[in-house]
Length: 212
Length: 367
View 1 (tube, chains in turn brown, orange):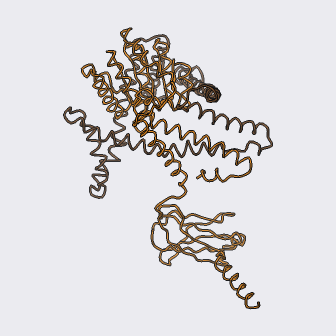
View 2 (spheres, chains in turn yellow, purple):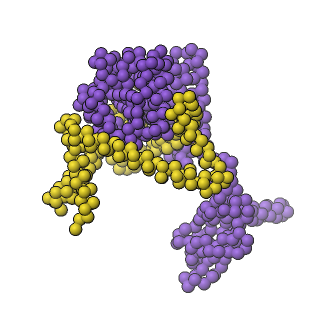
View 3 (cartoon, chains in turn blue, green):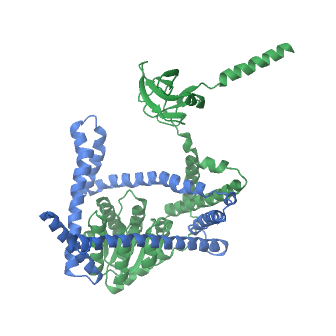
């Protein structure tokens, strides 16, 4: 026998799904209710999640357990407090420091990460000998990779107007990009259809019991 | 003559002795933090029977691991006595588990200051940095640095003007990631320029965000922009607000804002994932002029399909330099362009070398 709360959960899930889908017709009170509940509940969920899964285990517990040994945790603690000071207009400029630190650190770390994983890895992966393989399909594929990468880079070269030699190559580059976007679009739509099928299975199976 | 032959033989024997490989060797793993040792042994030992590695810090050996067949090296990453000698014994056993022979070796794990494997990264970084600094200085000296047109950005002022004429607000969405994502930072930089325009045109700007840190940064960016435009009183603190951290909760909220506030121009600039199409389609249905930009390749197709203008990948990062014409940002963009030229050159040279069977360049940059 299905538990009462499970049943309530299924009904809530089904009605919420229908309320969200009603947006496909137009904005209406059902969608508004579902939207407000979704936004409110998820905001509250993330607040509680942050407190119990980030603040308490990563900061408070460590400082309470060993305040001297874990002195380094005072730094993020103080930076966090400086962010909270935004609520007092007189001290709101204190939040500039943690913000600056975060943005600067992000830029520095990202530079190295992307330089390694995107730039150098892509560069070496493109250094291919297309004629090394006897398979004609592999050969054509590798030539496409080389031309696609170089012309793609030319498209993102901002210092020259897209005309003449640069223009032709940039045009080829954007064609490569659009073909890859098309393939990606189709792939993602397929994934979305599977999400829709999952929802329909929930409605017709778990809720209405019309399918098994 | 005879004496010379003996001297030569002696040298050969000495060299053989010096370079003769031990059957079992242990040495410090290079380019590490001093916690790893590398163990290697001859293939001939594995052919004899099973191999077991024992470890000791003070001559009391304990079993470290049984080595599977056809494995001739092992990296001990738990050399926690960094700086002290660690002893290893390699036991060769027969199929019945009886000890046939054993070999001993020892080494001291040491930390290296530099990871020389990352030298290519340093070289590229230095080239890029020098180029950026050079172009920034050129821009500061007043040199005219050309940047090609970026379509979506030229339409920014037009979109704000249209919103003003229609008496509708402008919506800016900085994506769903936090400030630790470069796309969010790039989006906020464009927000500053957009806010200056909305201030000049006295147009309402709505910025719903999904991360608390982004909220603080967005408020500061917009506030500063309104002050710089000379209209600090026009700044509406309540129009920059937090919705929720949840991806689909956020998009549900955005859809609600789009259909109720009916902004005439939507700017979706930052890091987007599965929510991209939902927001962009709602914006399209509402009739707003839409400019989107992200560096997420999987989401760009949706923006291309449903928005009027799309900033593809690096165009998002180039946008702030394009809009501001700030020497620092222009110089930085020029430096990056120089980096792209170097990469194109490297690829062409690398491909030519590969065709001739030379992999020096590829090997150097592979680490």
